[in-house]
Image (cartoon, rainbow, N blue to C red; front, side):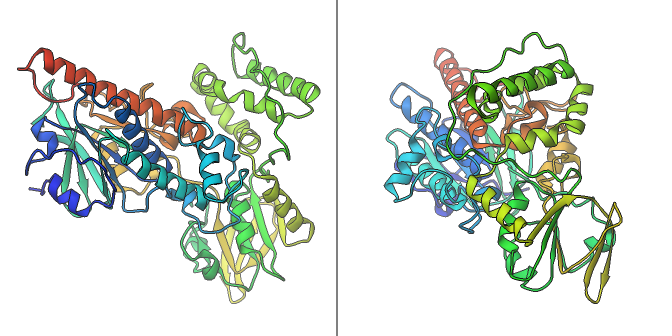
Length: 509
């Protein structure tokens, strides 16, 4: 039988700075005792850190109001606040959203700007590593709030999840049990899976390329710059946001960094100065994808005339995107992904003006070459890797770096936790663009016939249901709504137990 992690043991290993530890229920887990409500957040990147932060802050707001005692667990072997996006140490890897729209808190939109000023940074498009530090410090601040729940930060990897069969919940179902790579387990009343982005998809690469020493399937692997070295040209497969960063990192005198993709499209740039916001268009009368396309193009044309810029028109679609996505049929969604997604992404996810200028300068100087193309074949030669593209062009390069983006089809993700969720039926993979199937609150929808578990998710793992779910403004909103919903469930269960002392002390469905 796996060893159940105790609160006392967890406190010894926790790296969190908590001002007010929750009284321990003794050697048994708090989830078994029923006196403390335990909520685990799996993943300490941006989505997980924001969720834990909002749980702490929202709970602190209601402290002293006969609230149920709860405890927040943040579980991830990686550093807090970094994740894939914000763990980079390169100073030229910048936020792709202005600092004015990157606050961790929905109720304090200028929080990040004030933090930057207090730490000697100017606002604008700041290095991503700075934002990772901001998230980590903001979580520490939330944990020190008067009345905040205890925060336990465990540097463990969760590899399995399931119902805790020997710990029934109030309606006869089970608590959720998280299994760590160490063999220990943790039983909690609810868990939020903030798993972030997975390794890139390299299925496009021919076997000979995947086996080559100069092939780098993950552009964010530590030491990429040194591993690629200073000699030989480089091929980047993918021309999106990742390519912009990696091309900047790998440029050298005498080297050409080639970048290819199916469409050869580059991300658009942000304007040099913010334009006045545009009103959202009226799209209620649109009955299908064709109508939506025409209405959106008319709206963008109108914004060019009235604002001198298409960007405010595109930004005004942001609050409508999810509703529009959910309105069209599955066939229309597939058609949008096939015909429109790349154009949408290059306009929706823009790069800072300085990054755009640096890239264009490198292109003009011949240090970077961008074009359309896919890899047809690859051969390792004494001179490097000879790559033949689908149009017959051949390139000999010293390295090929996969910049195609995170794998989104969860049925093909090599992750034990995801495999356990899908294999047990506690979760279902969503249709493209991927992630898990969820209800409107982000709760995982189990396979037919499987008892639901108290499991939620957010961020990139909700793309299939929401489409736009990867940027901080959307994740911030989801984290806030999720924190409030989970705490409201705790309050409802607490009130039920106050009215009926004989009621089971567990979180129901």
